[in-house]
Length: 502
Ligand code: NAD
Image 1: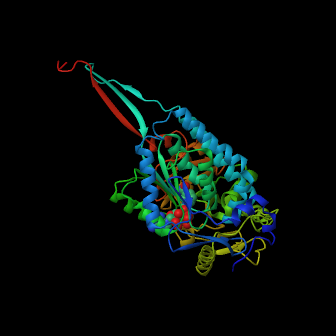
Image 2: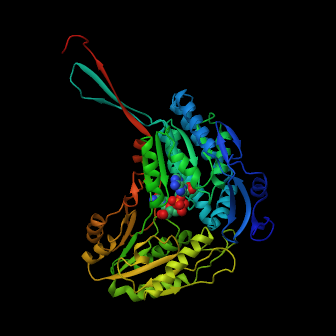
């Protein structure tokens, strides 16, 4: 189905957003030139809230990917970015943040329309993107080296230098923040960059590409190639990348790592999750209900850190679930741009069908399924779903659903809780709720996950390193940790008494 943007809820779009969407989309930025991609593949841009296609763009071709990497290489090698004063880099990255702030509503509207997420959540995404840009803008002037205590004959220093040409392949669920986790440290620290957004949500990246030009970044510092799997595969196999940061599914991450091995490209992988949310009976249960709900219903469960496995002490299992059902029933499912929407659609028909199939399968295996909320007739909606009576390791309890589906397992003691929580191939995040600080520390220590949130869930901040263990990937984004990913250590050794041998 193809549509115009005149009908409600699209009628809520501002004139500026509408005008931007009515121009032909320029799906690549290469060496300062914005233009359409050269591939024959056309990428439809679909509104998940209605199921209708409202625009499209030609994907970047293999030639576009090669040209983008080449443009980034030239811009790196000639020093037009890595050798400018750090203050100037800081200023320009702040300028990017200023422009995002100026166009805040337009970018939020584009993100809501493209991903289906409620407009309020899309606004939070833009706020987060701005915060990450500002945080790394500050780092541009803060990275220092060291004097190394080598033998006295020598003077040795360690300096941190830009890595070179960095690339990002990003998913559709948080397109702008996830791009900034990679782009902001890379660019602030003197690297050049090639971005490949998801074919399911490219608009905010394409809009941001225009801001890079307006901000006055030198040509070739940021390049963008929008397209699908083929574009991603071309980029990850490029022999001339120095670093590739990938966020997406575990399966694609494996393919990316294999492809990147050809060019010995450094990779960091932020992959899937099946995060446990452990609630002890002595916790603030009222707050825990809200956090468990936010942990799984936010973005309709399409969140890598979704707290998709509730592991709850048996004595409060029934009362906790009663309250959770009552509050969940009050949520409104709807179009992301419609006022009052709490839970939006899934990203695509394929994803909607996949999630429904997983729920049906769990039911056929004897699990009890309870859904809440009125599902709109159009669009790719799935109602918030709670699945009880599951066995540890059963399909729906083991596999990443990436939808609004919460499985529930009761536990009887602390060891039991930890064992159930760690019974997953993933290790991205976890939550633990208790009023006993000892319980929190003991359990946090034993959880195999990159992040443990205690008496809260899903807190992100530019200062907090984020990433996974096990099949959730490796490498950390955000915080000071990312500075090491986007710089290399150089050791310079000077002989103070040349030729004397001492
Ligand atoms: P995906 O793996 O299907 O796609 C991610 C990106 O990879 C897209 O840009 C896609 O076009 C590209 N791609 C697809 N095939 C490729 C290939 N062969 N080579 C190179 N690139 C290729 O993931 P998705 O469906 O967009 O996102 C959902 C997944 O992302 C979930 O598993 C979720 O847990 C994960 N995710 C992880 C994090 C994290 O920080 N750990 C954050 C968000 C999402």
